[in-house]
Length: 336
Image 1 (cartoon, one colour):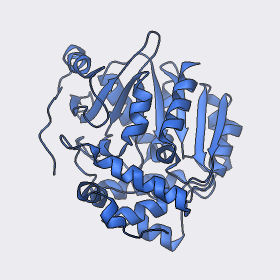
Image 2: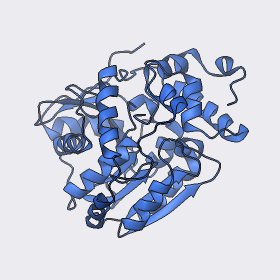
Image 3: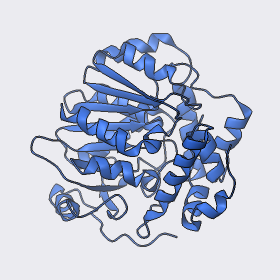
Image 4: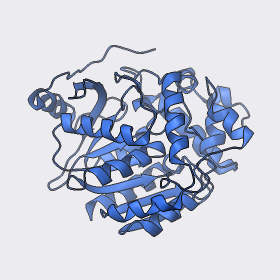
């Protein structure tokens, strides 16, 4: 894996951020918030949202907070450029990832054409509560957040563990979820979802993963993919204020349990996908070592209305390696 002079090519801020984040796995200095919206009133929340639309980017959008009926206060960011007839796109993050771990280039490409909502689920980052240890409960927690925002209709983008949660949300709320994007994820009971390679596990389960771990797990071991990974890590350093809190080790352990249970091989679970009738874009890199792309093929096969995109010379982080290209593909898919 190319790591020559890696330390000098990645900012100290980014290195610190990476040291406190989890790199999706086989499991997979903070300033005060400049805008908060802790309220059961959609009016208060909406006022904060309107102030951010058309003026913010992924690197500058403030952290907002809202308390849901389950008693949890969720931290989120909401901004973008909603067009006539569009609905908000809710992003569900990878294992132990927080608001700060989304690629600004990817998010801004998508937000140029629609409203986006990034959220820390229960117990993650700046959200309160205890992270559950099942994907099913995570989906119910995500629904509580969406209900607190009073969204009658919305799209979903789920990455890795977030893609598992997105599937469950779409199955539970078919009258609300319009379209779904599933990135580097797999169906319940899929293939090779319980990683056993010692090298993968060592990087994925590290208490303090660093840039080299992330490049190994998310990007293919080629010069071009590794270079794209380094550029992505540098982009994470663009945000200079109002940082999210890092995910805790307790969150890591709970999510690892959820991921492992989801990955128990069981072909009988595939039949559930027949009920996810919404249009779905399924995508992955051709060399994903965390969630083998065979799982994307299974999703495309068993979902009634799915299209499949496999990105070349890319791994689990294909959506960051091809940030603009994938962002445009997402917008095109959601517009039709």
